[in-house]
Image (spheres, rainbow, N blue to C red):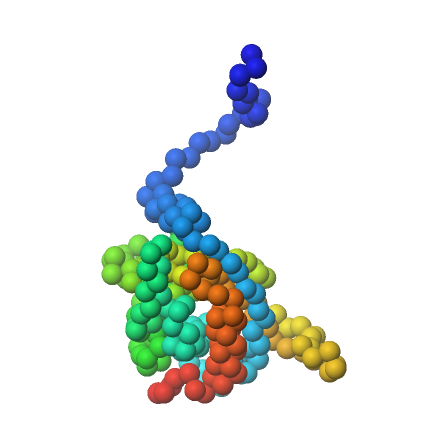
Length: 237
């Protein structure tokens, strides 16, 4: 009797049992691999996006998300340790910056890849992202459309999320989470009065096995500078 295993749910009727299959099973395996093989650490920051929003409204081309992804890609050029993969043995840094952009579909989360996101024109970028999102939403994408990413962005702002920590997309070494933009009366200088700022909360989760906090903080500093100067994001906008 002492070794008898008691089921704590025995008196709670089961309404349904679901066995994972298809894309949901694949996602589950990837997440388990990520947590088992990567040392997750997360850094949070409010990105000031007032200038970027004004730029977007003036240009009338693309959304804040489009320009923000471009800023991330350009920032990765200056912090190549994050544009990389790690397989437990080798930390591989890549020349091309291929952004995996997470999209929620009826069959689960899919991450289509925007290739060379740092050096294609705005028209190429916009057309590529629009096409890829449409393909995965209709489940018509091919393997080449969702592989080869070197850095992932997950955007839950449209779902009304204020802040979250994302899980690294293996074998990549980092993932950036975007939440919803808000206006806050705030200051970063205790000697100044608070003013209204438009803030985009982001999280940057990185593999501490190969990335240090100082390198991650430098990436965020560069990214803020990029979105403060959006006129420099595109050569031919």
